[in-house]
Picture 1 (cartoon, rainbow, N blue to C red):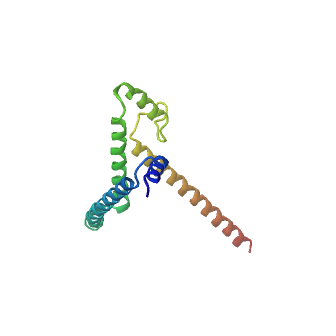
Picture 2: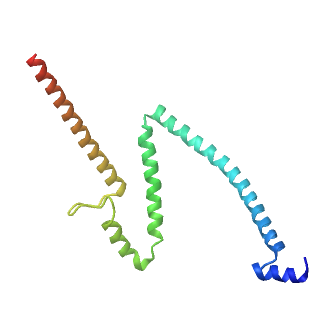
Picture 3: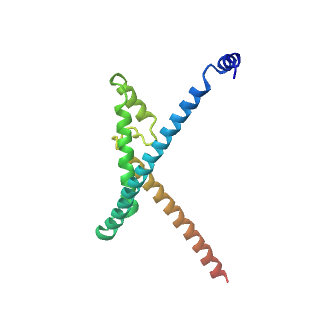
Length: 156
């Protein structure tokens, strides 16, 4: 490449192609290093998750703790820690504004005149109420079907 071509090349892209190649090479080496570390970490995490699953099975078999309840409470506690971290990130001069907004716009805010309850407990209460309502509706539907069958059988 002649000097004129080199100058034209430099003006066109503003950098030397060899410098660009060097940066790409370094970045790809770092990607490989990061992938190796992630692979090692994934293996370690997989072993921890396996121990956790085994512990849940043992808790159910030996202690009678329902797996779905244990898993739900563990997830709930993880979410509560996330909420605490989120609240801790709010500046002191905005914490009261956040408290008000969090209560006002929460899916599980306390009703007027009722004491505030933890969000997870409110969610659990809401789920329990919905379950009771669904069960009652199913019972009523089943009874109606039985009554209809009994009425038809009495006619025959």
